[in-house]
Amino acid sequence: MNHIFPKDEISIGTNYILQLKNLLGSGSFGKIYKGKNTPLNIDLAIKCEPLESKHHQRLKYESIILTYLQGGKYPPPLGIPALYDFLTSKHYNYMMMELLGPSLEDLFDIYNYKFTLKTILSLGDQMLSRIEFLHSRHLIHRDIKPDNFLMGIRKNKSIVHICDFGLCKQFRDKNGKHIPFKEGKAMAGTARYASINSHLGFEQSRRDDLESLTYSLIYFSRGSLPWMNTKAETRQEKQNKILQIKLNSKVNFLCEKLPIEFIDFVNYIRNLAFDDKPDYLYLKTILKKLYDKYEYNYDKIFDFSDYLIEKENEEEKEEKKIIKKQNLKFPLALQDKKESKENKEKDSIQEKIVNQKRNNEQ
Image 1 (cartoon, rainbow, N blue to C red):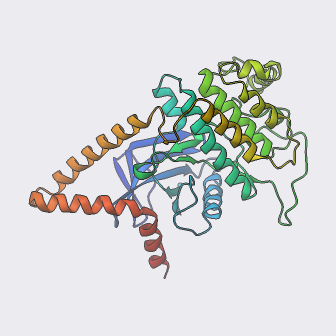
Image 2: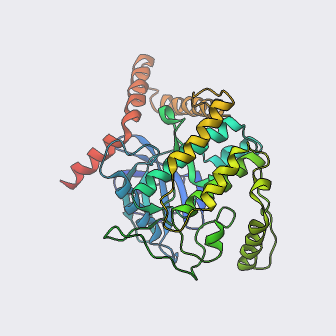
Image 3: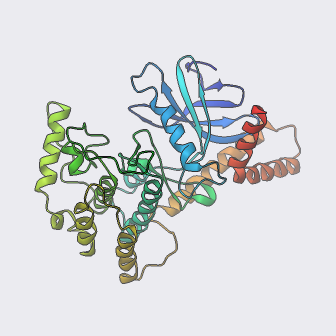
């Protein structure tokens, strides 16, 4: 396995190519590139983490969480990205995973920070379902925000996927007992979406994931949050200022551009006790009632659905151009058959890569 160097493509192990020209995203713990499984000619995402980082075990931990969430099943649970492999080189950890579409934050940016109520309700329902599944596996995410929810691609383009599990934590011990309440904890996650209790240094639990969800939905409605663009000399000072604005922001004010039912949604979550099991059905019922109240169709069509289709069509055209350049010696009829076969193969990505990995291990 090779250290990343300035070329368009590098090899990782014997099965993977990382495409440096196709950066999909980056964060404080590493970068994500588009890659390819070379034996199967299948696109995927490769998350990279430098070993020199003080958080260099976070990617390994995330791969363990994803393996646990998938439970060895194919396909993985709805809205959970498939994990294909985890490899380590001299300088980097690499996690090979399912290639997904843009994040909700990216799409919100593209649509000038404005989503319709129908899209907000539809996203909220799916985001809530992903969080509920995570909680059913005795895990809390601790960094719920629009950046960490990605749309699927191809036949899954209407499915919201929850991602980035590096800050996940079990809220039950090996005996099934809820973790104890503690104070004096450092805030984990992103200050913009962090719960008030997290700001105050309290141990996080299921209620905190849900409070972060409410800030995400309010953000989609308002186009911003009252504590965004807060200026401060230090990170801690900024977090303290954000906390004060959150404490002083009444729920009615936060939800002023949303239907009045959202006030019940937010108040219910804010009133949860540390070890309470949230009533996810109650929260989903609020969203469903609003869907019915405004007579929306349950068609899984979002504001950005046409954009995702157009983007996918453009990418397929580019891919076909590349394939034709690589196969100039083939008759056109054979090229079309080859392309059709490759498109069918991409619908069974998880199964093929898992089988390949099993064969290598035997």
